[in-house]
Amino acid sequence: MREETTASFLDKTDWRLTIHRKLESCLDAIGTTDFMNKVDTAVEAIRAEYPGWNAEKDIGEEIKQLRERYKKYENWWGENNTTKRRTQKYLFKNDLMYKFHKDIYRYIKNLVAKKRMLLWGSKEIPGGKQIPYSE
Image 1: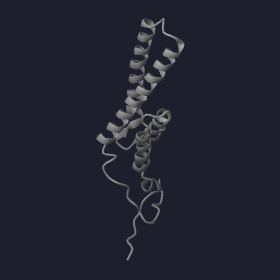
Image 2 (image 1 turned 180 degrees about the vertical axis):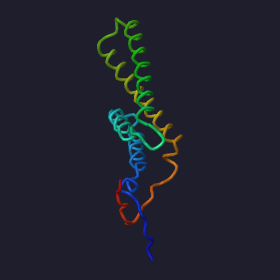
Image 3 (image 1 turned 90 degrees about the vertical axis):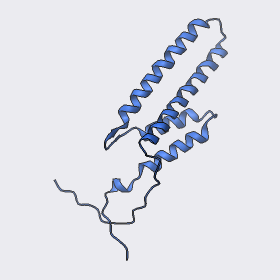
Image 4 (image 1 turned 135 degrees about the vertical axis):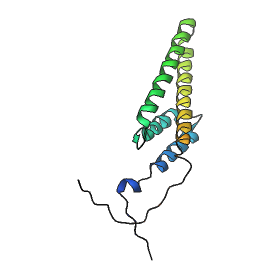
């Protein structure tokens, strides 16, 4: 006999599975030119206001701090290396952006691990009845 469950559509959508997939794609892309795009996609997948946790705010603040830190370093390096060739400056900025995205990836990975979003697998909820909406 099948047990009936009541769950809303949002309960059936397990965001942990999406987050896990996005973090895995970042992991697979480390060292490639696509890594930065994968990290940006993972950030967009994770940034939301979850019940009891505003990930949008936490992640946004951390990215802002990292961006300021890397911008200061880029400016310092530029002032102290004015005689470098254009190619060397380009490669430096490219490497800096890669490291910036790697720091974001590490932060995101550790953050979701702390929030226990990666500990449990996804749960399949078979069928069930839609909970009626009433005001």
